[in-house]
Length: 267
Image (cartoon, rainbow, N blue to C red; front, side, top):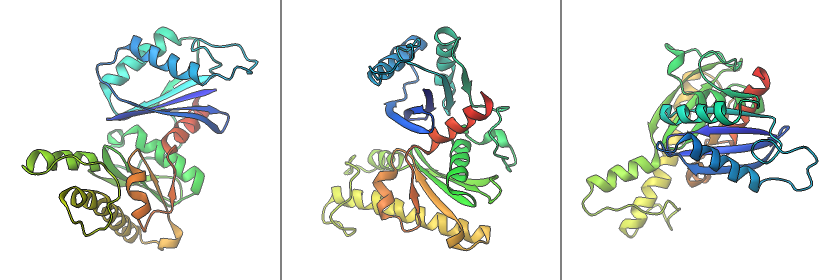
């Protein structure tokens, strides 16, 4: 079993792979104040709950067979504690932190390749492996990111926009009569009350943003739309992906798949 951990700004997504098969996936809040010991208790609890009682392999430190652990993070404070977990509790388990110098197989054609988040590189690797290139990955999370991969599997650039929740939070702080609402599809794009007006702007507005950015990126690449695959991922993708006309595939586990591929290349 391989444990893959994607630490994002708002949430941490964990996946447990048995070979190529994703057997379990969890999503927890990213807490910068969580200590290494607390991370260990969290991991142990999640993985013990996923233990197959009929599995013949001897249990590892987590209470179940664990062949390796691979981590990527966009939060330096959390990554520091996770490194402590790996060293303190899992020194005998093969583990990998994806960072500069780790072989990913994805050439990064940017002015400063170190500026690109490792989660975005994992998405690019997974998308090009699963669907071939060229492709565009739209990750709908704390920020909405757009990552472009060439036909040769190169990361050629992208864009970053404020995320749905961040935008709604800012609107709630600056709008005296506005408040936070549940992110669901309203009855109509033409709303009849304030709650549905906010939902309409969030769902249909951000879907239109995604479609518009993809259209512009396809034009900038100079390729036919039918020759490029647009892949959506991220925790908030289910909110808008059904309303997007330019998204071909929704793959919630894209980053985890990329982590699995990088672990196989390095360990």
